[in-house]
Image (cartoon, rainbow, N blue to C red; front, side):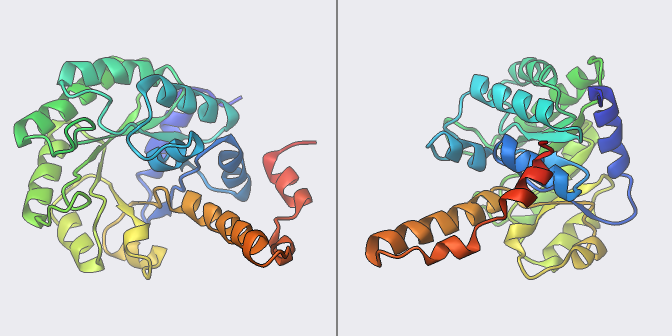
Length: 272
């Protein structure tokens, strides 16, 4: 059995790779086991995908539900799991630190926290955003396992198109102790190059905002880690919608021809 410490060490090692690698985002235990079975080296949760499994939208999951979700995925897999921990489920730095202690107990190997409030739906003021990252980094140093801390600058994703502020925040998060940096909402390779030229820590890019780019191109532009957010979940939902409409509107079942092979799924799940 792979220990949490081994998973943390493996995740840190992956971030030292010379070229970019993909960390896909499962939304439940089944999708996590499938992706592990395909050969991915690490996984990351998706807040929007998990919320969907509960019949909700992103941002409506409670802390207790998030912790249980992480616990289930970490226990079901043997590769590192990075948790999308949203804003740490708190505004105050000390509360974020307390919640990260609880998250660490679920078995995850890393987590990301963002500088965007869940309740008031605004970006945190700069100094508060930095203090939150620093508090998270400091509490991780006290843990029995070295979680990888990813700090997210959310402004591009939230409609604040200020690349200079994005870079300023990322640089401050780096200085505050983040292991990995992330700015979802980058839409071009040129933006990616501009950001990664100004930081010294591994950078995560959200591939779904630059859909035409390849792993090699993202790597050449400075990315270390490539995630897809909730995109895999929504890609899986699309055929359900299409099949449902076909049955209702056409009274036909031709969608059955596109089902996954039960034997392949069973093998990837690792079941006998």
